[in-house]
Length: 107
Length: 201
Figure 1 (cartoon, each protein chain N blue to C red):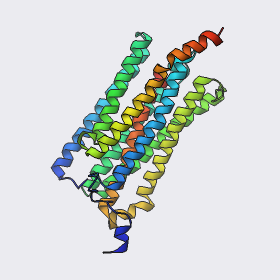
Figure 2: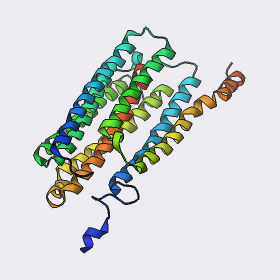
Figure 3: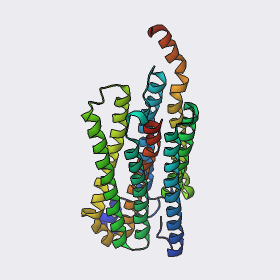
Figure 4: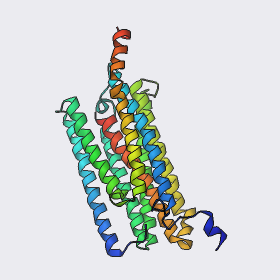
């Protein structure tokens, strides 16, 4: 990263502050939705994860500058992302075996 | 050609293959391994929770207001660290140092709140061995807390003994702050997922 032109840098600063405001608002939203407890569990999980995903994307895109990064870094993250999703899907894929185990072991 | 300049290549100029300086590429590789580390724990959490006959709601046993404050603290510290890097790019070391100190301060606030939270759990005799829920709670938030502690040490180095590099090699110093910032944002990012999963659901 080369030293930025002051005008260019100032544009970045404004973006950081906007992202900060968005993150603060989304935090309040996610806590408020959880506190009111009016959603069913699957809906609550969906809302919480969508809000968290949005916040995470904002942090990654603007604070971590992924919105304008080099191919080598995207390639690293795509490979990592595929493995990460595989890891998260393991509980779903193995759910059948968990159920089967419970049927035979849990009275 | 001076010997010292060739010891670690591409600390400032981009590497021809990756297009970024080596420190940044190295940091991203490290973060990829961190994603897998926390991913494995998160995946275990989902598997154990779904497989359990009973599971307490985070909000009924944990302190949501304190955790919400901590979320705000961590988000703010992400802004201060990116602002430190921004000031360095504008050659304003004084301001950048203040932002780094603010980041350290916020990180310490996070740790103090974590300490209050843990103390109250111990007072009620809730330990990692108490049950699966507390085992996961302490493992996930504890590992995250260790990452915050690591960040504090790195930022202390930048405002303390490591600050001299700003005079000898400002560009490299700026890059170091950027890399530490990437790490710090990742720590923030992990918390963004931990907070709703453990405390709110």
